[in-house]
Each structure stands twice: as C-alpha cells, then as structure tokens.
Length: 111
Image (cartoon, rainbow, N blue to C red; front, side, top):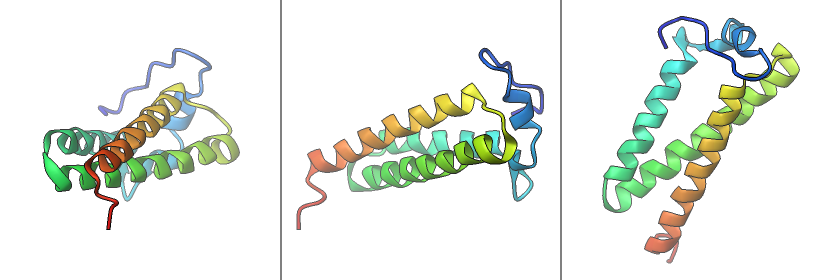
C-alpha cells in the first residue's frame, strides 16, 4: 500500500503486476481498494443481523468478481502471475462461501 515493491515468494510476477497499468483504478492503487474491501468484510462479520449478512455477500461477491477479472488480466494482458493476488482470490472465495452460509443459515432466502 505504500508504493514499495511486493515481496514475491513464488514466481516473481509481483513487481510486473504491481507496475502494470492495471494496478490502479481511477487513480487509486488496487492495494487500497483491497484494504477497503477487506475492512468492509470484517465490518460485515461484526454487524449482526440482515444488514451484516447483506454487506458480507455484496463485498465478497464483488471481491470474487473483481479478483477473477484481475486474474484474467494477469494471464492474458500482463502475462505475469502474482501469488499474492491468487491468495486474495482464494480468500475472497472462502469469504463468499461463509457469506452464503450465513444467509442460508439465517433463512434470508425464504419467501
């Protein structure tokens, strides 16, 4: 988030991805966007009831969709893979599974 290089433990594509034109959206670093998304997911876990569950499903589903687009960009546009981005995608998928489970358990899908 501070503009330094990401320590890439596997592969070496982190700097390539981080320095690509896809590393920002509307002038904002994707690391900040990720921080905001993860903060919203944490808030959704702390907010009881329907509104917490709704925030959880919105942020995790949005995070999964955006992470999948970024994976596409890494593979086909940037031609470099960032293991941290892949780890974030896995976390988003797990968060989406938890959010869906919370909704199902609460019975929010019943009419």
